Image (tube, rainbow, N blue to C red):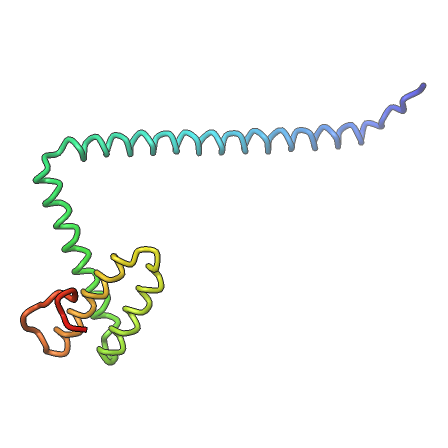
Length: 140
């Protein structure tokens, strides 16, 4: 059986195609290797940060959590102030609360805490600031 010998042009075309395929495979392998290396570094950094966090005294961790909570409250107030500029306060509070409850339907306690803060913001904006009574004690 005679196998036909391809002409030199076809051989050159196949060689360049094979070379291109090899380059693509090598670059893909390098990209995947870098991703794995970055993932491993991220895991190591996370483990190191967890060890550092747990080695801190409890008082420092509590203070850090409280400060973070205050930053989040300040951010929420700033967002509400920005949304409430030139808009009715009641509408802003109502729409924002509804959007948060829809977005956080899997975390109802978080949504309720944010809704309570929105209620306090609304009352402060409307000038009803006084004794703050948690919603669990208010008559519904």
